[in-house]
Length: 250
Image 1 (tube, rainbow, N blue to C red):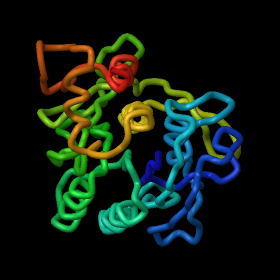
Image 2 (tube, rainbow, N blue to C red; image 1 turned 180 degrees about the vertical axis):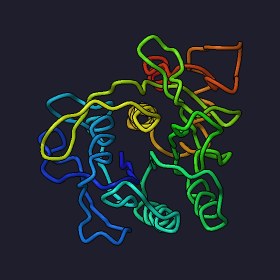
Image 3 (cartoon, one colour; image 1 turned 120 degrees about the vertical axis):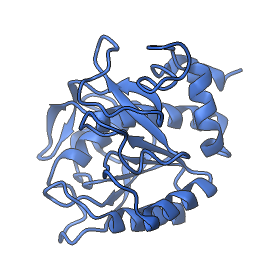
Image 4 (tube, rainbow, N blue to C red; image 1 turned 90 degrees about the vertical axis):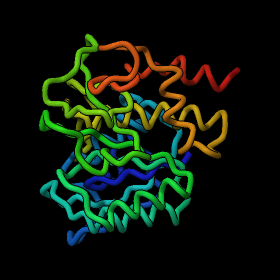
C-alpha cells in the first residue's frame, strides 16, 4: 500500500522508519525535503513505524510530500500541488494532519480530483476546539476526531457534522527528529491511526474503490459512542480495527 503523507517531511534514516519512505518531495521554500520540525516524522511513525515501536501499518510504503516548512507553517497552494503529485504517484491513501479555517477553490478542486481518482483521503479535524478545519471539512474526505485512553473526546479536538470517526490522539509516543522519540497529542495522530487501519484493510482486500467504500466501512464497523448513530462529536463512533479488518476476511 502506498500512503502519501502531506506534512513537514520525514527524517531520513530514523531507526523506526528504516525502509518505509520510498520518496521525498519538497513543495515548500525550505532547502531540504526532509523533516527538521518533528511533526511529520512523528505522524509517520504512528502510521508506519517498523521497529522501536511499531506503527499501525508497518509494511506500507510512504510518500513523504513536504508541505509544511521547518516552522510548521505552510501554503494551501503547496498542499494543492502535493495532492496532485499524490494522484500522479498513484497513492492509495492520502493523509493530511494539517488544516485551515477557510476553503479556497484550488484546494477544493484538487480534493475533488483525489476523490475521483479513487484515493481515500484522511484528515485531522483540527485542534482549536471549534468547527472542523479544511480540508477535513470537505464532504468526500474522512475527518478524524481525537479521543483519550478512556475513549473520551479530547477537549482540543474540533467537531461538527463532518466528523467521520474518532481515534486515539492523546499522549501518543512516536518517532521524532534526531533519531529520537516524543509524546504528542492531537487530531494529527488520530488521523494516522485511521489511515493505517484502512491501509491494512486494503492490503488484504485490494484498494479498488477504497475512496467510495471507506466511509461505509467506518459506519459499519466503528463502535458507537456519544449519541446513538452518527453524531457531530464521534461521527460513526470509535474506530474498531479488528471489526474493520475482519470485514475484509468475510
